[in-house]
Image (cartoon, rainbow, N blue to C red):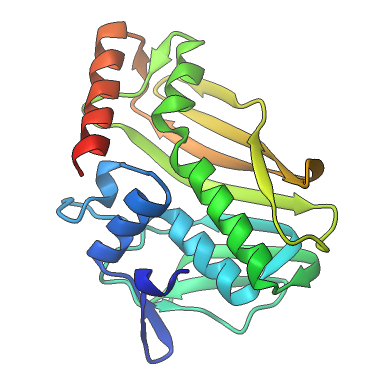
Length: 230
């Protein structure tokens, strides 16, 4: 499922601008300008790194991912042998830290199901979840520089003897102080209608400003126009 979104160069993985952008738009439904092919500061979607880790190491009962560096088309990613704790690095710089506990399952069907459903959830949270969540506290991101950074995510599964996983959104949380804040997006994992796990995604937002409906409408229109034309 992921072979078209990276290149294997010896022992290292390289992701081009075109591959990262295509994954963001066509798989994750994520139209963040940072993932555009011609972005000044292009960034590979964090969800693509998450997907590559699942594809290589499988699904564990407990998994925690910390996004430590911004991966671009010049990054040459080293994936280690694995274990309970390991880092994905580029030129000895940590890009993604992974911690795992419990049993592990390499079933391709399970890996693909979790990857697809999580990435779809993750990619569509902006603007449909994040903007209304911040609006509850009468604040918004800066539409000129919408800085929302993927910080970490965690998944817990009660059992691994399942083939497919569906994801449903749970109650999110937003707190801020001054111009910086933190968003926690929560979700439940279901198998055949039964809850078998849960998880959450942590994001940092900066440049927070007072809420303005006109600016919010313009930001959403801009996002929808990009989605319709790109």
